[in-house]
Amino acid sequence: MNVEKVTLKQINRSDALRYLGYGDTVPDDTTLLLLDKCEKELLNHLDCKYLYRVFPLEGGQIPGSAYRLEGSSIASHLAGCTQVIFLCATLSEGVDRLIRLKQITGMTEAMMTDALASSAIEQVCDTAEREIMKSFPGMQHTFRFGLGYGDFPLEGQTAFLNILDARKRIGVSVSPSLMLTPLKSVTCVIGLGEHVANESRKTCEVCSLKESCAYRRAGRLCSQ
Image 1 (tube, one colour):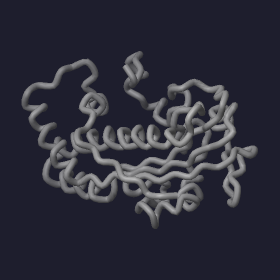
Image 2 (cartoon, one colour):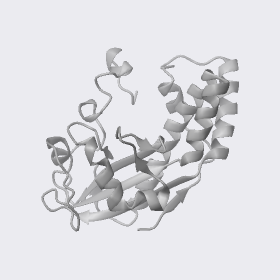
Image 3 (cartoon, helix red, strand yellow):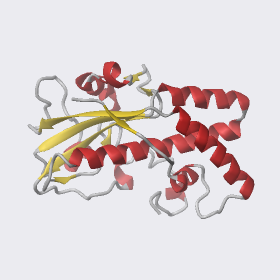
């Protein structure tokens, strides 16, 4: 269970703009210049890391621990899978400090940096997924399913992180309110199998933000 690093040379600007609510609107030149500034600063504060473990799928029970994959959402997600990957990724504490500083000096830059960081952690997870799957040639896999999606309990965060020894290895822990720290961190599972049954992409029904999503209210999808 090695810690792997990811280096980002640029951040997915289109995703960051979606998080900022721009939709199809093209930002003006002033906004783009400010985004450039925030992106350069963010890139200098990134320390992107991830680690993972792979377990045989035995009725939801994780071997060697008391942790169970509970809920109908995760059971459906892993239908047809024979193994499960536990993945944790983070941009590290420096990004949290940068965002807190910008909240003091200017909320516009703070919001932009936060959106860029949200885009960056997804890029890190995409990279991690691609690298992990190189070890499983010929295997099918599910999309990343985060704790808190559907009825997959968020209360399992502590046990999940303990299984990965994430606090010691990459500095990720969980607060009493079940928030990950650093904030720009992700915990998720990926199913593996020869005949994976579920869809290959995340849908609104398993998204933890579906009730408050601005895209759903506008009759759109966040992937559009």
